[in-house]
Image 1 (cartoon, each protein chain N blue to C red):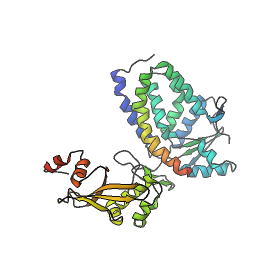
Image 2: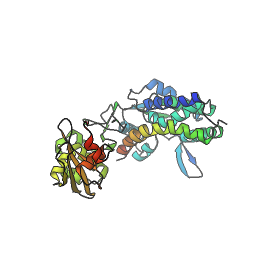
Image 3: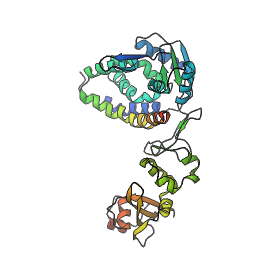
Image 4: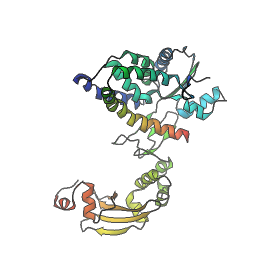
Length: 67
Length: 286
């Protein structure tokens, strides 16, 4: 069972293919919207969801599994 | 180049936020068939052949067990670092879905599979030929500030019983909730992690802790609802001040107050964001 990962030559780290897909999308969105719009959507959607879902639920479960 | 959002587009920001909060905090069981279809789309978008073997686990620890059974050479740390987060990737998937749906940015369609997947499963491990899906938690309990919190059981419970106990956003040992009687002021006040120590004191009740600590009185107001200003020396933390006060229902509380408080009246007023004299003039307090 081989993880679907890619090796970033520049950083010499392996990461999931999905991170590479996300990076491709990120670059293309960045080319099409001004920073101000990017930040507005991040502040009002991404960051607020991150505070509750990622920081509260995902982090706490992950920290406990790691322990 | 999109320079500004229109009023209609701005109005959709909270709609997307709330939608993705619901997805991220969903406690619906795993939808295996829909997750399977969505993950195949994700593989296709990444230029990978579709996986052929699919397994399900009830929690992250169950997934680790299952993957180790499939491949005994896999180490726990590797399995953990290979995990993707499905519904808990809600923050960035919701962000890009807004760009896709509201601003019409086609590039975001590459994430369609992962966006769909977040609707149907919890965490997952994706290998070249195999996917291990995890169920979502059975329940997630939050306090009024949306921090993980449950006073009578686990704050997060998976369907196999795996659980996380938390007190106002701080994870705590399960026995502090399941065996509250065995949590003493001494255990609480000598606990190494200061955030957990504060949580332990709150579980026991600050009034009980202060009694056991031989707190000394700095100022006592004649009105028991104004209360008594106390100072205690907490191990490893130092001197802290508390207001011990009766609430309207007659229950005793102890509230941590800033170290510059000099009277019980001043400390009580601080809890309302008022000056001391203003509080004395109020006729009704909650």
